[in-house]
Image 1 (spheres, rainbow, N blue to C red):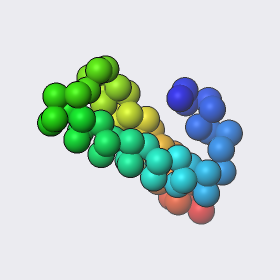
Image 2 (image 1 turned 90 degrees about the vertical axis):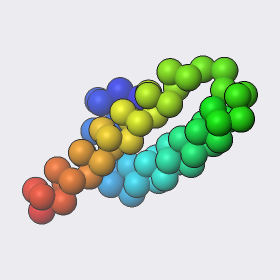
Image 3 (image 1 turned 90 degrees about the horizontal axis):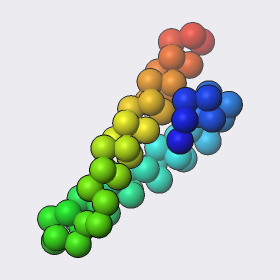
Image 4 (image 1 turned 180 degrees about the vertical axis):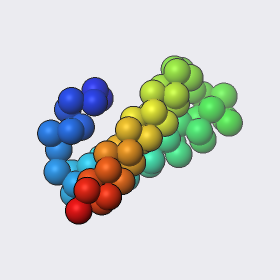
Length: 64
């Protein structure tokens, strides 16, 4: 998910997307611990996407 796509989303959509990414991250970590993770780079990608979303949400809160 790229930064421009995220900027176009509403705060509610961003919160929903963040929740979905966090659930996916939990599932990926479980797969990693059990040795079934096929793409370990996905964890890094998801973590960075969550950070981008949280940054946008905090910027919007501070702008209000």
